[in-house]
Image (cartoon, rainbow, N blue to C red):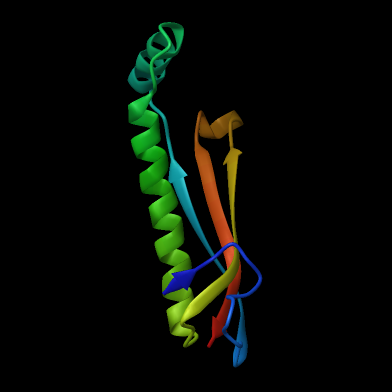
Amino acid sequence: MLMVTTPNIEGKTVKQYLGIVNGEGLIGANIYKDIFSGVRDVVGGRTSNYEAELKKARDIALKSMQEKAEELGANAILNVRLEYSNLGGTMGNTILISVNGTAVLY
């Protein structure tokens, strides 16, 4: 499945627009990761634990969106957008990654 951030694919003509598809992924940070991340930030290192967890959540969101597009018979998703939101409050340091795009058939 081709997923692009552009509104079209050069040289291709959309046969059918199948609708908006979306997916979500959550990452919840625990206290030990928070402490480790804070230490790494102070010494100028990268927080690889967070990066790996964010990647997992992003991959889950993209896979979920792709599965929904496949159910509609799509072979591509146009205008893919990713959004990261800190849910905070009662959810602690939970980060929501949501993706959406337009499922199409070429």
